[in-house]
Image (cartoon, rainbow, N blue to C red; front, side):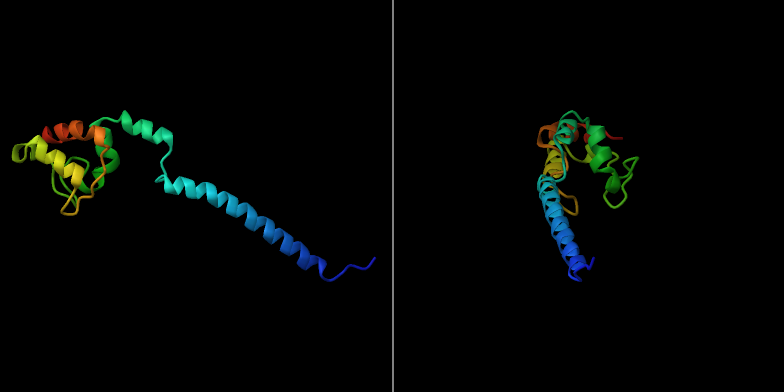
Amino acid sequence: MKWNPLIPFLLIAVLGIGLTFFLSVKGLDDSREIASGGESKSAEKKDANASPEEIYKANCIACHGENYEGVSGPSLKGVGDKKDVAEIKTKIEKGGNGMPSGLVPADKLDDMAEWVSKIK
C-alpha cells in the first residue's frame, strides 16, 4: 500500500485548525473573566462582608505595612489625630499623592475611614 506524501501535511493542518478553534473558544471565556476584572461573584460577596481589617490586609498592607508603620506609603499610626474621619474617607475614596483610588468598596468607605482614624 502506497501512502500519499501529502497526508502528514494534511494531518498537521487539520490538527492546527482544530487547536486554533479550541484556543479561540477558550480565549473567549478568559476574555470575559478579564473584562470583569478577574473577579468572580463569590469574590464580590466576600468583599461585601469584609471587615475594614480584612480590606486593609487585602489592599493596603503592601504600602502601609503590616503594623501600619508605612512602607512606600505613609504611616497610619495616629492619622486620626491629624485628620478627621471625613478627610480620611475622601483620601481613601479619591486617592492622590501616589495612593490609588477605588481600593475600598463604596459601601465600606465609612467603616474603613472610622477604622483607620482609630489606629494608634
